[in-house]
Length: 92
Image (cartoon, rainbow, N blue to C red):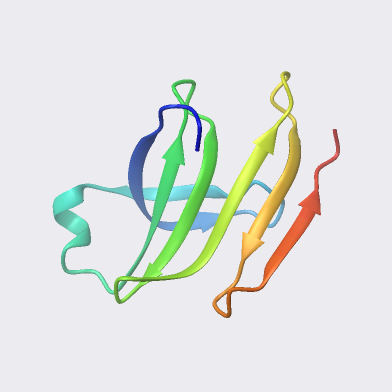
């Protein structure tokens, strides 16, 4: 990711529309004993740029989001557990 990002951890996500909304924020100390959690990458404005679902320390699913200047989703790149990449166009 070209811009500086903040990494935060979450228990789960909500919604069915992209981009997903990560919920149940966890502290770094709370992920040490978890089997599954989400690691989100946010820009300075708090916009979710990417996340990974980690299961037993391995990335199971990853999303990368691209937005237009107005903040509308342009594209979502989704990588599944098998490494297959699907690109979904936004509504911009």
